[in-house]
Length: 502
Image 1 (cartoon, one colour):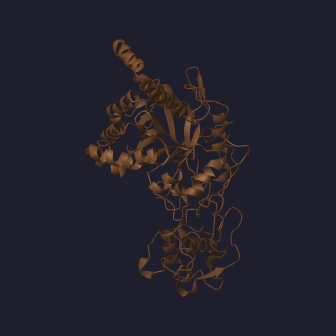
Image 2 (cartoon, rainbow, N blue to C red):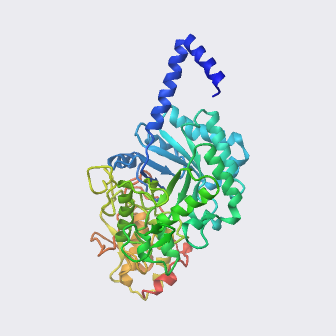
Image 3 (cartoon, rainbow, N blue to C red):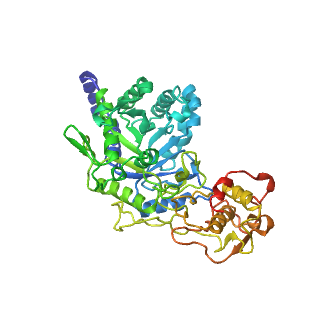
């Protein structure tokens, strides 16, 4: 504000006590908003599950665990309503398939903000702080589909927030994968944005900087281990006791997260944005679906990360603690497994809200995670391969193929939690997964030639857990309405897999 304009405003306010009071009230509210902004670690809450917990149950669980920030992947109204007056700060998400519409229509952006942000803030008491425009839109697997729409969508959503008077409260950002920057030598100080998208990245970075918004990036040390056969295992963890380390000038990196993060810091710094704030949109470790995805490694990684946060430790380039969202709150049994079977197992909690392992977030007096309360389960019964059935039955392979294609068999295979099961055990797991996902309908345990049978004896063994499904909101007790077994629905998904066990 210019000096002359400031004097004029001050004079008018002295002449209008009510105006002065209202102005002071507005400034006080703004200061309180800024002071109440929560830094530290939140969680991602993905909802690609066949039997999700009710939003109210999840919000209560979040509060029980002292979690004050949540990142969503959409703006589902029922989910947002559950956060009303909860004290939890929200990042709502816009899926990639909406970017084209929002990029090409300011009105569409205004309608989206009115429906998904303004209404929940003004009348619902939902504390929305960020809008995530897209999710990793520049991944190479998208073949450039969102290169031309991400920035315009970002700009239009920001303009809509400004028009709604919310731009000082709600900031826009784009969660990006760490592959938008690179270092040819793997040394952080050699980092810069990818050459093929550098101009676009600098335009986005400038826009974020101009509007006080953070750069959001998803960093996954597990993926480094998964995709690089010779990647040093110890370098993936924070409490690295191995000899693996990286030296960059006078800075020593003993873990890949710090090195990756500071590669981004260097990319920003080289292009004149060295002070731009960074939010880690996703970070975590899966617990199943791969030889390196297990409970021990996940606990070691996440607790190591949280220990750094609790201790106030950042990275060599940015020593202050990072602002991050753990990935993820729950397992998601309906998620695509195209990247790998581990994709359904990132949760700190199983899909029923039970903690997988001890993890201290530094937010409660408890040294562990607090489970969801009031969860209802289906009956204690499982569908297994009939003891009288033969492995040589020609219907075994197509039956397992059908069950696994329709349900979730990602805990089966080499190095997984159920990797030591016998052939019968693998078949039983597939049958039970299909049975539970279909709410224990009788028809869901009627595989051809009497291959299956319902039992009240828990077939779980060792690390392999045969689940009992929770009662979701969509389940109507005693009503037969799910999918039965249909020979016409055969797929070949598990034929090759099953042959390894027969």
